[in-house]
Image (cartoon, rainbow, N blue to C red):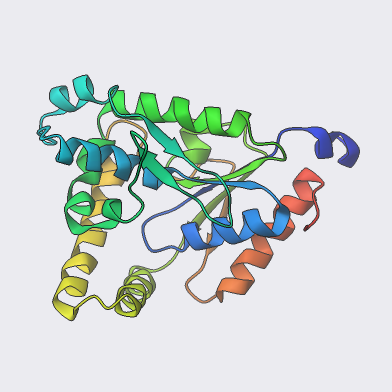
Length: 237
């Protein structure tokens, strides 16, 4: 496919990686630079988890979660400049980042029925993205968008990821005890998401590995943007 053909083909950039690798910040920035839509799939799983907890569904009961997961109406706004997430019309962008949701999102995400429903929603978002979409998560390249234009797997050392997450939390005024607890939870979630049977966190065979441990944010954004520009025939807006 030549550059002219690629420029008219649907563009899907799949960015996967563990917590703290920088994929949300990087994905939003790449989408904004290239004029693409942005999809935070992790927020969708958090929204589902928040709904389960709010409606007293036992999140440790996979069958109960599977039965209930078709009920909430989850809508993910895809504007890179201001992404939104609502459940049944309610803005939940704040509540879904709380410690209770964080502690249970891996369990809810592991339920096949949940993944099936949200994958359908994620693909729907890509289908209506006018110029294309940057989708970030943990199984974008391996499961959700196996034919993505560009696949990237972002990673970083556990120490670097923990330091970045701690800095983010301190900037938000979170106390040190909570930061320490959330650092431990980071490793637990990585282990749970990497070992689950359904759509585990893994690098797609054809994904480009980018280790961000020693790179600045601007360097990572520049590297991925250049890759997309080259493969999709896009240019910055």
